[in-house]
Image (tube, rainbow, N blue to C red):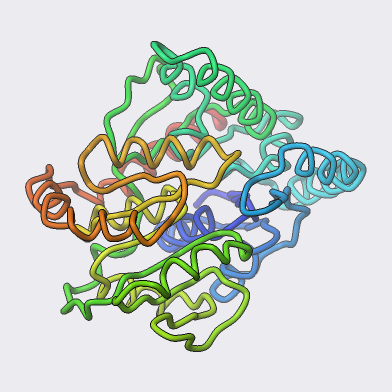
Length: 353
């Protein structure tokens, strides 16, 4: 058994859900110390003891990421970051940690760098410096600028890792020896296939997109919506607060998915053969890139704004998307476990020697 520190990004549920699957696999084999803040801590503490840690937040204005607002909010809290870092350094020494795993959690990554402890990074494709560098080839000047800024942010959050695991639903052109791609780490393939209920599942990150609600209400379809600040029924829309089990059930029973482009939701939709309509959050290049890759594979549509006309167009094209999903290459979603075990063994063996 190895003493491991596992740091999980606190913004949103995507990192936390993936971490939960990984933790379930490695928990019986190793001594785990989990650090997380925000929604990640709320999600993981139901199953594991979680040490609270300052988490970096995205600031939204009118349904888009405010880059200046995000920068200023987190810059003002830099002293808190430093305090948390020194506290974590003491904790790591006390626990005799031999390996640090980071899921885009920066404080644990900096602790690894300062203490010389091996670090294993579990990345989303477009939160990996190598993938972003390769993606810039052949792009327009504006796209290259966006990718450069994204790479700069990733470099701040993950300044150095000894090995990178990159779950992906599309092929990558990796150029570094310490980076390995693997199938998405998701929950749904383990759930038996159940009958669809004809509803469309809507999942968004921000609470402010009232234009989305208006568009849905003008359509003769039923929707189940997550990510809003309220619950209850309003016409043809059922609003629900996030509950993992209920969300999984609604996801599996849905006819198709309407989302803001998070990697985990897209990967899970592909695994369950669910067509997707994606409205990427403006100002968040990672989600836009995820959505474009999904669209290029023929599994759904990407639109800049959600209107009743866009939804009707998507619904009319559902047979095409379903066909593409059905004939897509089968994926071994359980393959991550062997890859993860091998990476942990390699890094801890190097440390021991």
